[in-house]
Every structure is written in C-alpha cells, then in structure tokens.
Image (cartoon, rainbow, N blue to C red; front, top):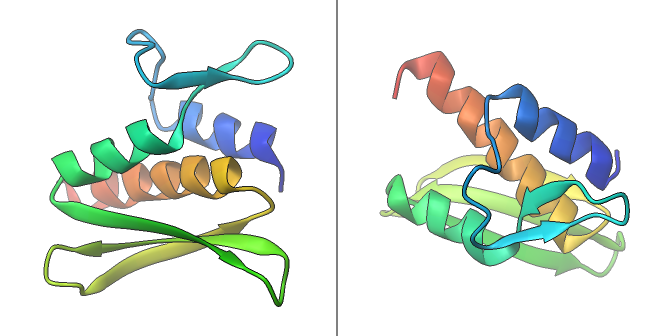
Length: 100
C-alpha cells in the first residue's frame, strides 16, 4: 500500500492540513497527521486507537475500538505512520457512512 496511498485515502475523506499541529512531512513535503495527532483524533471521537508491530509478518496493525473495548476496525501497514494514517482514513469513511 504505502504511506502515499494512505495519505491519498485520508485526503479523499475531506481531511485537510489547515491545522498543522501534530503533522509530519513526507520526503516530497506532503503533510499528514503524526501518530499522536491520529490518536487524539480517535480519542476525541470516543474511540481508542492501538498501533502495534506484528513481528511475525513485519508489519504494523492499527486497530480501533470504543471505550468499552468493542472492536470497530483494523488495518495493516508497512510502517507505524502508514497504519495510523490509513486507520484514520478508514475510520472517517466509517463515520461518514453511519452519519456519526
């Protein structure tokens, strides 16, 4: 997939970098939210994000749940940043679909 794909998906949900607090830059200069900012975005919506390294598969898994621990979704990526950004994109799509 790649970080650029995850960023494209995030921008496709309407996310913008008008507020650059907590953002990072790709080598090409594109802005994307860092892990701390993504985590805060999930917390602000009443969700918990957890990103962990899956050693057996050499990838990162980002999973989000509600405050009670009920799983709401999960994605994988080659890097922590990729998994977090893609998780935010997918969560934003889910939220838009259910009108939250």
